[in-house]
Amino acid sequence: MTTLRLGGPPRRLVSATTDAELLDALRGVSGEAVFLLGGGSNVVVSDDGYDGLVVQVVTKGIGFERVGGRVHVTVAAGEVWDDLVAVCVERGLSGLSCLSGIPGSVGATPLQNVGAYGSEVSDTIVSVKVCERATGAVDDVPGSSCAFGYRTSRFRGTDTHAVLAVTFALTEEPEAHVPDYAEVRRALGVGPGDRVPLATLRDTILGLRRANPRNPWSALTSPPDLMEKVMAELVPAMKARGVKRIVAVSSAGVAESFPKMNFVMRFLVRRSTIGAAGDHMPRRHRPP
Image 1 (tube, one colour):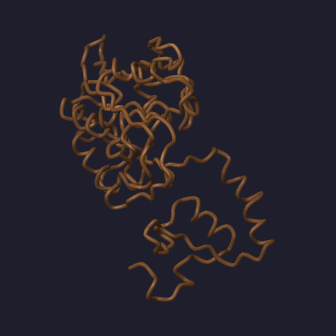
Image 2: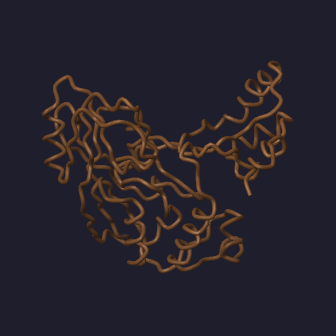
């Protein structure tokens, strides 16, 4: 049920294949803990399982409608996000290519305003269809009222609503601007401001993701002022306690080399004058 394949079973499990089934599951709850599960990515479950009801949202459906000079794409919450991106690229709809390869379901994307390579879902979201868990009332919330921010929205961290569908406004054009990221431009062999076919951009983003697999904990977000807090608090505290080195350990239990550390870990290593993990480890434990 989760991509990490960790944790025990829930006390109760319901798979909602339609909005009606999802609403019925939520209406049938009385004082019971409820967890809505999408694609199961970046979810950590205790070995004891979940003492409550897990509603797995597997609703399906993608609709297309021309509105003005754009195409509105309305997608059920249970659709796989990357499948949606692939469909839109095939249809020549621009706006989502940079978000290729992100795991999870469509319904989860507005909660944390999913983004990558300079793009965020809030750039294209027209509205989010939600239901109020307590009453079952359904409402279409305009994107402008979703309070989108860096990896957040009005829906994140609350259990008052469930996402039923998301509507995106995309443009019909066969090419897209290359994002202003050096690694993307290098992979494509283009300069700033250039355009490439949607499929080429998608394939390049997917290739970069495969070449740089992400630690599952990379989904944890950082506040914008994290680096300042690190410098002001964490690094001095480590030095005061005589910390000499940092070893970054992957989920497989193998220490990672300096280049493979995530951004925050590299920052800590550089700014605190603590050596990279590989410099201190026996050679047999060093990554290739």
